[in-house]
Structure formats: C-alpha cells, structure tokens
Length: 90
Image 1 (cartoon, helix red, strand yellow):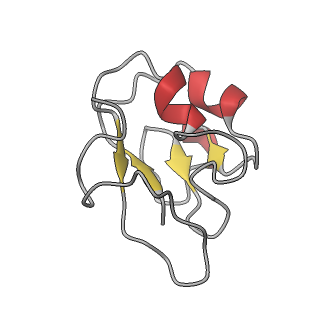
Image 2 (tube, helix red, strand yellow):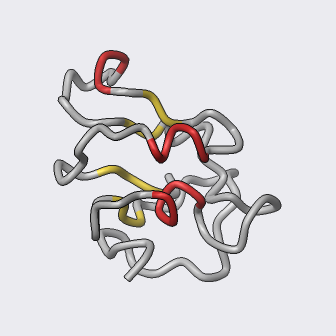
C-alpha cells in the first residue's frame, strides 16, 4: 500500500497538493466513509522516482498522521520504508 492516513488527519490538504500521482482524496471522496483523507493503495508509489521520502508525509503538519502501510505486490516501495504502522516522518 505504501502509506496510510490516520485519524490524526486535520484535513488541511497539504498532502493532496504534494502527491505526484494523485493517490490521495479528501474526506468527501473517502471510500470508507471516514472523515479523514484517504490514500488509494493501487495508485500510491511511495514517491519512488519522484522524491526520496513520500512528499505527503513531508508536507503534513500533523506529526505521525501519515504512516507506512502494508506493501502491495506489484507496486513500488521505498528503500527507506519502515514497518507498517510506523510514521513515515519522525
């Protein structure tokens, strides 16, 4: 999956603006019905080929909001990734 957005999300849109592959949608388009932004696992490339770290996490003002998710077969994964459930940016 690459990254997930947790319920710490404050819906500021910083991550949406930074995603190079438009994998993030706002709470109005969240397919789970959640009130936070959502990352589509089948679109997220962990910014491999774009940035050294996922740009969404670098842009996020909420510490620990964007975390590593499970790796999806066939999708790129960062060499810098940590275990699922840990923050992308410390």
